[in-house]
Length: 275
Image 1 (tube, rainbow, N blue to C red):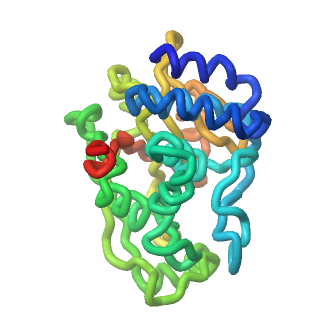
Image 2: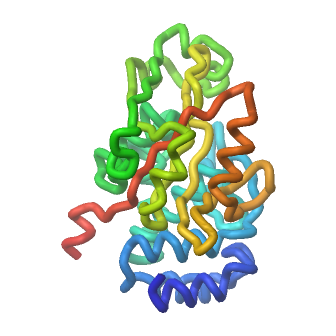
């Protein structure tokens, strides 16, 4: 990690962003803007360690989900990734919410435009916008295989679809795919992968469920091996968990088997590089 990134990590690792005064937070983020993007992702995510886990802490400020568009005192697994991305990519504090909205929505912020479904919305939209790049096969090699998820009217009529309460006109339908590294091969495959990659957990297909993705976080390499930096419902906070431990305890969870993981790199769109 670069000097600036290490400084931020050491200053904030025991407190989390929620207990850092706004002026100091912005000074630290500004200091990081000269560092490589991967260093920014690692350092800024480090500063969330210890932040409480709260399911769906962000919303549109009004309507069905009146939670704020951005906050620093609570995250879940998805909003941790989204906020770190926005903080890493936004050229200044004033544009951070705008960048977060680009990641979270396909249009103006609204429940109906939010990228709810990972395979069908969040990943395709952010791949298209050039803020993430799929690198699963780069590290999985011959171990990599394809996973698909089908969404139809009957899927949306089941419990998980009904609970999302999306109007029919904005319900994604079709067959969506992503590459994955099988669970048994993950530790070998990520040995040479860099810190800061987004790790997406893919489980067995449940035809009645609208997604196969149950979790996401950041891959971080340490002297003791790779860890998953994630907002954990189990730990009730953001924590670094040895990846081997995470995989082991979830492979033992037979109700919804983990089949593997997909890997994505956070990247700067060409429009931002030109600045």
